[in-house]
Amino acid sequence: MEQLYIKSAAVCCPDSEILTAFELKGSDIDKSLIPAGMRRRTSMTTRMAVTAATVACTQAQVDTQKLASVFASLGGEIQVTDALCRLLPDDNELLSPTQFHNSVHNTTAGYWGILNKCQAPTTAIAAADDTFAMGLIEVWSQLQQQGRGERLLVCYDELWPEYLAPPIGRTAFACAFVLSTEAEQALGSVTIPQVLAQSELDIQSQWFRLTESAPAAAAIPLLLGLQNKKPGRVALNIKTPIWASELVL
Image 1 (spheres, helix red, strand yellow):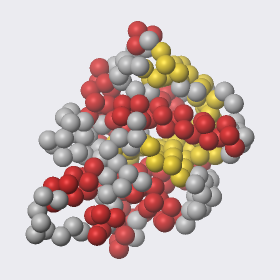
Image 2 (cartoon, one colour):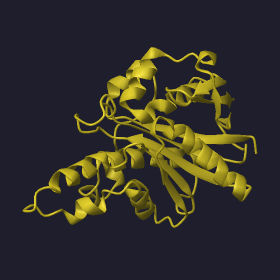
Image 3 (cartoon, helix red, strand yellow):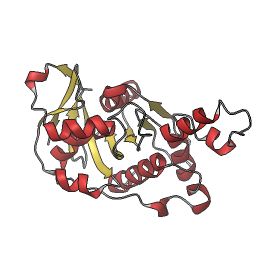
Image 4 (cartoon, one colour):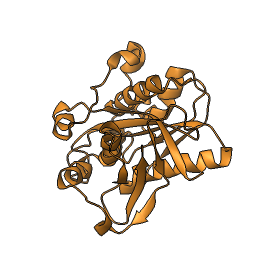
């Protein structure tokens, strides 16, 4: 298998100015997708990722109860994890069971499974600047072993506490793709990510600055290529080594 077929793609970004700046179609968080009782326990991370994933799955008309998935995020539940770490030195402060429950990196994947009554396998990964590229490779590897099928890929990061690793975490962004081994009704396809010399790609400064702040925004060149029907080589990260795929429409 040399390429993945893209059945759908979706974006969720609470900052509409970012979408406007890139002329990228997307949506704000849809709070109605999570029941109120559960929504109170979820973070921006989960709400963004669920919104993007739901839109992508609706577009692709897939059965979410049977769809295996890969959730890729550099920070995961970084706000919750940071809050717990700040409580640890205080012996008089009790840790919140809900926060502890929500502090793991696969929290969002777990909520997605609960919401969709999905018992299919899910994988949660983080790979620093390469997180989106590694998410694509993880999907390709799983489908290569399986031989055929579909996967949901969700890449997301929320706002980080201001003192952590700036400029990372200054912008929240989520995107989702339904990827398949089958070409039927596909928007296009991407080749397996490969390492290229940075000089071989046109890295736009606007996208570079945004991705420094919102790691999941590494997907924007691919999203724009699909939206604007412009095939060609697309970068999947911003720092060397540069990963890239060929978008075929």
